Length: 333
Image 1 (cartoon, one colour):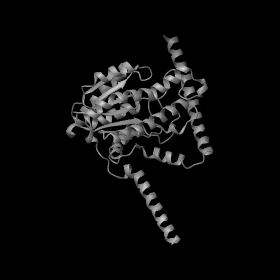
Image 2 (cartoon, one colour):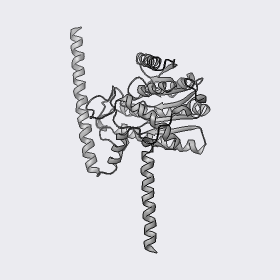
Image 3 (spheres, rainbow, N blue to C red):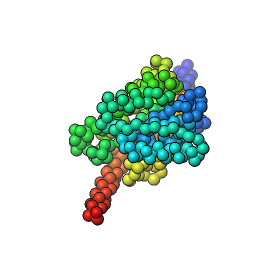
Image 4 (spheres, rainbow, N blue to C red):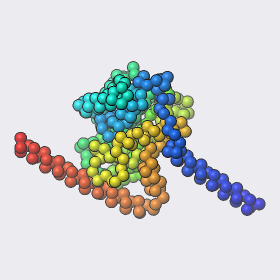
């Protein structure tokens, strides 16, 4: 009798493990699900996607991919010239590849310093649009603080700015956009996360803020399901991506922003369809997460400390070169 019970327990364990493995690999082994669910009557260029941090890197790449998939775009950033450049780039690519017009608008907002009233005014300005996709991408380190360094070296203002840039702005914008997204649903919210949620030395505030983003996303996704709201919410697990900001001491095999954004758009439809709370769209990033969860803490800590120390030194060297170039330019002028 005991032997039979043990066999049943063993079989159930094997089947459950197999299901977990299939569930983890499904977004890569099953065909991608197009995002037409989030387009008005399935027709292109009638629905809008709003993307923050959209003047470069992952944000701009996601905006480009969404435009090619039939969404009009609202770009959110703090630099007008770069927003104009991003709009021109998206419009020209769509015309060149699809021979069709895409509407692109932009909103000027500084995620690290915008007041609640300014965010509210920006949302009011686009409330007439059929926005069905929100990508909360903006994040990183404000210009006033070093990209990597110990918490004790941060000014009090930098602590607040890091929270504003990586967490508070995202929460405020999502809170204000939810009624619009629900009205226009089915809709999709994608919150860009980071492997730093594991807790990276030298990135304490960034790690903490991204941990907030992850918990916020999972809680909101469950709340939308409980309310039977037509808004899907997903957390994007993101490892290192080569961008205009993250361009020093980048490891071999690190994806560029555009291939990463394409992987995002290819994976999130299936993930939302399966009711997942989070998805890691780049396969090797998922492997890194799995490995980090299996190796002893001392080995993980040693590796991440060496990696981040190398990046810190590379950033400092880049800053010295930039200062030297600026000084030389001033002398030449």
